[in-house]
Length: 323
Image 1: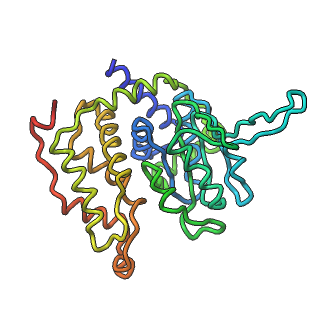
Image 2: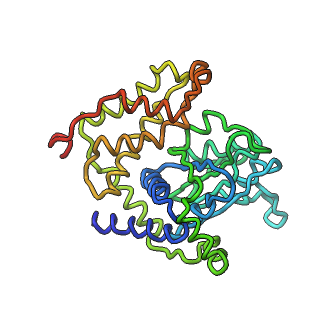
């Protein structure tokens, strides 16, 4: 059964790859985060395919999806839903918000107010929403992919650390290579609309199968030496002179889960140090708050992560890493 689930995951990657050209690493990272029960933040400039990537995944996994374009006038009730009085029944009836779905796309999340941004906190962490004192669970599986424009863009405001920490990974798609952009230009007339709407993407799994795949991902083995490596990487972020605020224990859990997902996507039943290092690059940079020294020396969070990866020794590959 594990081989079948692995094969189905590869099919999902292939379907998304029909729409998103030349971004295999981004596609694989999003897939790993989905398998690890995490939420995804895509931070990049407009027009590089952030929304298309998200909607392609929703269609390939046959999930009920909703999309909200965040603007300054979007209110929390526009996300969580609200109660409306029904005269015939003489009581208040809950009107579900777009968050009541399997796959929620929060487009340009940093263009809305902090009050609305915080409406996502409970549902991302607890997988439930509370309206007028009544708590309701969202459907399972539940995945949030949020997109944001880079800091400094007109009309944007920074997400607070508490919000950023709830995203398992933060990725940047970047501009396409010359070869990929030539292919995009050649096919723009006949295929752009189909690509934008993800019409070429076929559903290869459903929500129930995704939940079963997640169970297999949880069973991926991690040796004690690798657990030690995971925690030494995390501890290093809290001891660096360049970092004012390091990775939280929630980040430790995210690193562990994502490492298992990367191992599963490589068709392995055990985690290697390379899986951990690959996952660390995805979960760490957006969680770090850089110190004044780092700012003065122009040390970015990515540069700090690179220094930590070089400074923390990885365990050797040996039989002890396997079950």
